[in-house]
Amino acid sequence: MKVRCLAIDDEELALELLVDNIRKVPFLELVAFSSDPFEALEILQKEKIDLVFLDIQMPGLTGLQFIKSLPDSCLYILVTAYDKYALEGFNLQVVDYLVKPVAMDRFIQAAKRAQDLLALKLQTSKSGQVADKDYFFLQIDYSHVKVSFNEIRWIEGLKDYVKLHMRDPSKPLIARISMKALEQQLPTAQFLRIHKSFIVSIQFVTSIRKNSLFIGEMELPVGENYKDTIAAFMGNPNRDQE
Image 1 (cartoon, rainbow, N blue to C red):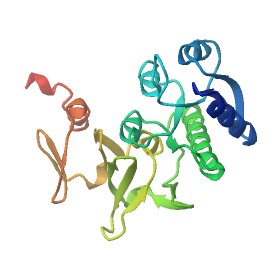
Image 2: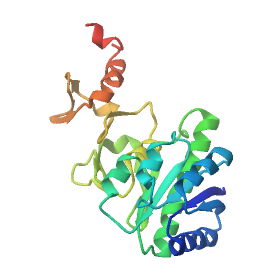
Image 3: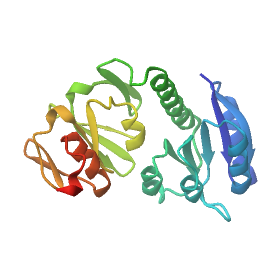
Image 4: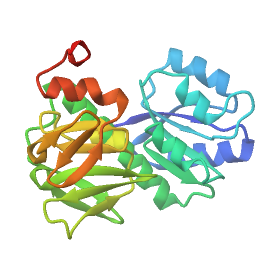
């Protein structure tokens, strides 16, 4: 499938390199590019865009502010000269965070990740649920590793990585992907987001307290924004009325 792209960078040379990279990747389709983030906002109102490549340090509106100002209608890959914004970028659920100068293989890797996510979204919208499989493939280093949903106990967000705690505690899996991107690949009937940094497998949950969830002896925090989700999971959606 073709991925319709918008490129944004206030530096002319950096924008030219970004545009050139997009044009070299067969499954990417460059719809528009701009050095002005406000002009880019107008483009997004007029065009169907699947993926936005954007810089962070831009005058008037930073890349992070740009993402915060828009509804969750497309995917984002940050391309910047600074690695210090990686944590905030992944907290905004960007697909990937590329530090300039970007090697072409690394660029293609990030673009392929976005294409896979878009394909999954399309499949989900058609079927109403994640494909009827008991596994998925997770990119770890330079390999795609087959991971069984039934083997995952809980998932932990670690800055710009995630750590999958497996049924075999001696074999955790660590991958560079945002929590949101990973969450979209998990069957909602089997996994529950309980915190911005934690997703749990329902089958391994042993008990729940007011601010904690337990998987065996492991205690995980329940985020304030997820307490209604936990209450509904326990069959008590009106928890505040107790």
